[in-house]
Image 1 (cartoon, rainbow, N blue to C red):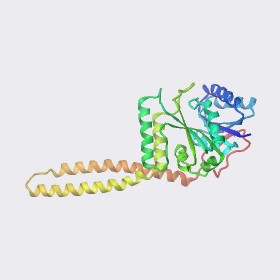
Image 2: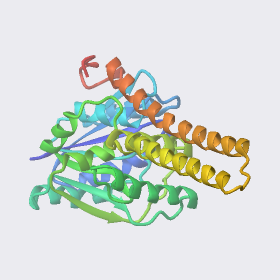
Image 3: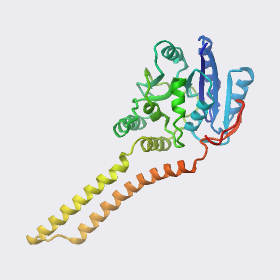
Length: 315
């Protein structure tokens, strides 16, 4: 009988966890597969860990990993993938925006249809702010245009993978992780399941607009060198504009037409400084990622767990 590992990253989810756990156990009970549920507490400051420990006391399928502080969702997913034992491994959010009811169909696709992973995407964003929807949709367009990591618009982290897929994912050991891009980069045969947007069952989202913007920037930097190439393109364009402007000014002066030298200099300097600031910003992001990788710090640090081991500092 196959074992399904369900990895659930949690950060201050005390309001929704009992609802989520009840729904997940209901779905698991209706399936023939065995389950283990790995809750990863990402440094929560509420009663999230207390609730998870309560589940573990009455359900031997429940495991937990509690970080020493908040390391972020990417680190939480990585920790769960490392500790998972299942033939199939599922990433799922605790807010019930990833419907557990899709699990039987997802398992069937791996067991009977020959897929290596089953991914999900929202076909609607009902209930989300329009500005967030606009930026999210355009992020996928930009990402697919500038990188070799194929990303489906509306894609969720909610995904079921076989062991081969999981091992390939874990072999990508960079510290600044962007798992959505990694899914597409490693390839393999993937089935997509569409569903309508589901609003949170309880609690509030932890993803502010600023965090989402930083996440998007990290994804572009992780899977594309186009921003670096833009520096060369901008340099060529600026050189061309400067050369043409200089020749034009000389011709106008020769024709007796007065051209204010100071005005031209100020405009040119302003334009160049603005472009330089943008380009140095891109440089800074890439250098930050290089600096992070060179330090080789662990992706996460475990505070406590019932999985029987603590962090391997080589990870």
